[in-house]
Length: 469
Ligand SMILES: [Fe+2]
Image 1 (cartoon, rainbow, N blue to C red):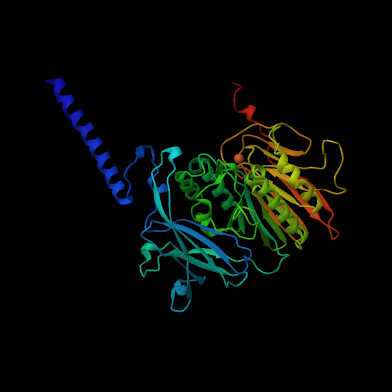
Image 2: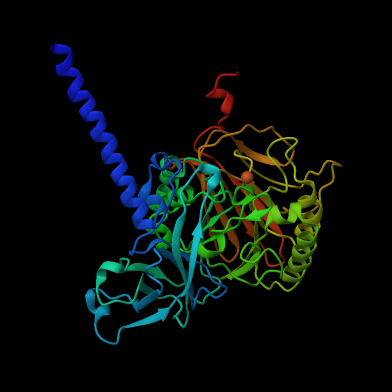
């Protein structure tokens, strides 16, 4: 009798829990119009993957003219087939809501679906909305929200604040550079991006040097990236260059162009929204699609030709390139020969100041003044190269000639402040400790002096934390 008493409720409980699981699954299937969920139970992060009527994955990108415009993208479910941005000058109170104070811009909406079979993710049907908000005043704080245009607040985002840069090109500005986030983005990258924002809430923009996620088509991973950044992505404009993990078999993630709104001023061909240039105050910023360049000869020739002409016509005092693969790797045997051979001559010819990269899952910063033939390429400080990592995936590196500072097993973000004659670069850990810092000072003639600053913590190496296998 005792056995029966225990057994029956157990069977009942198991049956019920499987019932509940099934009905939840059926309900979701119906809602999203799916016929199959091969391993839906493994997709734990429902809200990170499926859109709803309410905008999510809201992100502001820098435009070619950020003093007068910003680009914003977001996602909803497919029932929301139109999208609008409302924008107003920010006010002390709710006065910006009053009649005549806001204007509305219609977005371009793309009905889109993606199924990441590689990770057995279910089909995700979404509507991606993209808008370019133009006609803004420089140096002004705006509020904006995105939604479906209805009178009800329920299907709009909250109002986000955003400040346009002023027109004084010599006024200082700051940006934060992140190496690969890539893995455990919700779990482990979130604290990095959040700490960076906490340390520099007035930052002007953020720069992501590729491998934002691990599997290019993984909707859950993109959901994690947007979740980790939360309202920061909607408040601080960003730019990003693709990494090899944004590609699968030579194909850029199908989500890249729908979810970002990056300048279209790059070379014609396959690098639309991955290779482009932005003028920001006294800096020229260029994203090179290193993956496409390394793999595809036509793309390589097109990007090199385009970069040559962009840099030849560059009137900005400072020039920064970002690309995912490093010109000089932190690990021996990881060099990207085609990339280096095609870009280094231009970097040297035009005296590029900073090259911000990722991919190696370690940290290093240095200048290529000591080539393998022992020659100094420049009389003064040349280009400063940095490789960084913001996510938790960690490799090892080897000490090499070009490096001034090196690190492993450390998640980092870099706050870079640009003045008319000085770039101040500071790499921080998630604890806010200064891991690396320098000033790059440029005189009237264009000569540069590098001043290394004292870090707060010693160099860290993976071997100190992980036992040899
Ligand atoms: Fe990579």
